[in-house]
Length: 179
Image (cartoon, rainbow, N blue to C red; front, side, top):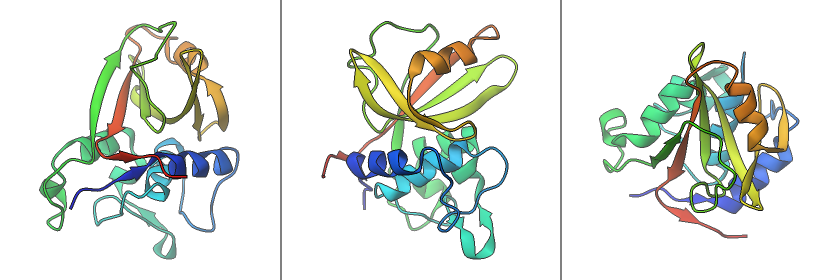
């Protein structure tokens, strides 16, 4: 059975919790960026499984829930490889990697996309969720350093402090926009 991401629910959750930790419902420790985007996609309808989960009752979360590269791998590969109850379809795909900041991301980035940041010093190290586009420029919410409707150029400038910085865009394959 394919999973669906309700983008409006994911964005609503991100907006509500962009500057706060939802410690009553989700466990966290250390840097919180990928944990936060996982919460957003889960609140938008992506179901937890044994390989992508956050269990506050036991104070644990899986690497795919909280680590940048493992999140990307889990979401974009065959779920059946990791979860025998899955239908074998990936939940998301990598849409594009971009090495240079653009003036207009229209038709590249969409609401609800997860953007991950890379630089030569840290590798793939940060995850953010896209909230809207204003004049072609995406705005995002994130944790680790709380960000609420921050312009993507801010994230690119902080990632660009080392050579070979880039971003990758991860998009759910099945998207709905309910209110």
